[in-house]
Length: 216
Image (cartoon, rainbow, N blue to C red; front, side, top):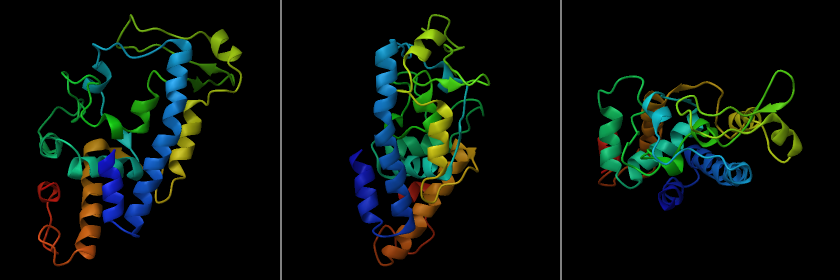
């Protein structure tokens, strides 16, 4: 995600830059865990399915919103992403859902934690054991038995551990908002920081900056 590195560099030593670096490094550090889980147990989302995205808008933390905002403002297809964020869509459909995309997601590289964990991570049950349930939207999706998870020892963390790690990132909070609202707020934070850093620049000139302007 070169645009993230560029955004971090452009924001300099600001709090926003440090927070963006923290979530970026966090995602990079945990993704191998999910890759190992799906490889070892042979589970993955079917390539033709995107039902979870079409029926779900995640609640996300400020840090998750910040990295999404950076992609919406400076990543590939930024104009399209900004249009989708503003679109009058049913409030059960993720604005970044794309039925024709390989991953059915237009922000896959910056997707929130819950999207990364889905079908790639087990959860801890009340019995203190790890459990994994196949996708409720796809009856043909594969599952993992409790015995297989028990046999894996402590090599895989449960979902709750990743959530706790996320909440402790610099500048983050356990308080969440629906993705569209959270991303809009995060875009405003980045725009405000850039206005302070580049008060005479043609793009971030201290003028009132809209979501669309930020991606220009």
